[in-house]
Amino acid sequence: MKRIKILDSLTESESLKTRTDNQKLINFGIGDTAFITPYPIIEATQIGLGTNKTHYTDSKGIVELREAISSYLQKFDIPSTLDDIIITPGAMQAVFYSLFIHVEEGTKVGLFEPAWLAYNKIIKVCGGIPVFCSLKNNRLTITALEVFIENDVKVIIINNPTNPTGKVWEKKELDILVNYCKENKVLLISDEVYNEIVYDKKFISIGQYKGINSIVIGSFSKVFSMTGWRLGYIYSKNKKNIDRINKLQQITATCPNSFVQYGAIDFEAELSKIQTQVAVYKRNRDLLYKTLSKINLKPLFPDGTFYMWVNVGMDGKKFAEKVYNDYGIVVVPGKAYGNDTQNFIRISYALPTEKVIRACKRLKDIKWVDAYKKLGGEK
Ligand SMILES: Cc1ncc(COP(=O)(O)O)c(C=O)c1O
Image 1: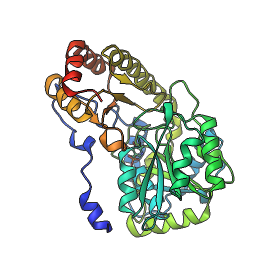
Image 2 (image 1 turned 120 degrees about the vertical axis):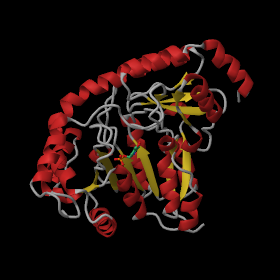
Image 3 (image 1 turned 90 degrees about the vertical axis):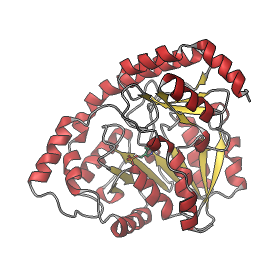
């Protein structure tokens, strides 16, 4: 199919459609946080605005912010220079750039099911063909990768920690994946926008692996509650990747927003405060996991992000409609996250805990869920 036809055929994002201002609703739909951007970042942006930092910048982004990102990446044992980093208007744009420079008509791109719904769409818009790999028990083994060999996949994209499951990839899984990519000369794109939202496990970045063609994507959106600012970045040791992405950025965005970049320079100073928010997410996760398990749904226990992936034992869309109509709770149906994800929903729990408690009280109606599961017909 041609690109424009593909674009026309795409459905609007469910999570954006469910955005609502109704106070009584509890919105677990949108992948955004209820927190405000750290004030020092707002203040630094205002200073930027007031001091004429309002013009085009270097297309790769300002040196000061690239330096700050380079220094931050050391935390994850990623050795970088300024030449390895490009600042982008958000991670989504970074995902698009990374795929666009590698995907030609018919290129097969591997992804792990369930995968954040934008990947599938971006791959198709670039002319590529998504190839889904299912993980047994949500863990990668060598045999799972056979589907990529069979399909001669040229690019793989992972999301670590993962939206929608909250999976934090373990070292042995990353080792398997990296070895596979090295042996088969596959580009590995690692979307790491939730890198600071991790609970009990250790997060490991793909950036620390040497001898592999990889692109790491980061963002200020989720960690710093800056989704509307549109600020992300790309790290790659491969000069060709950086050069191509830079050219693409030059002809599409020119550069990232100037004053937003100035505002973010001291972002590392805010990281310790972010831990308070992560503690709230963790509390929310525990409350929800307990409640949903009690009403016989099957949530996957998330080790990171602020999402929970729940098997509801019936069509996820019907379930979402029912909890919306009867309980005023918004969740996202799982269908768009893969080939076999019909019976799932995604819950986004970056809300104040009192809202999560209220939702849990509403959901405790065990009889309703069981009766409705029967009505909807379990798979
Ligand atoms: C996995 C993943 N990557 C990227 C993004 C987009 O991030 P940004 O706001 O930086 O474009 C999202 C947003 O939901 C996401 O879930």
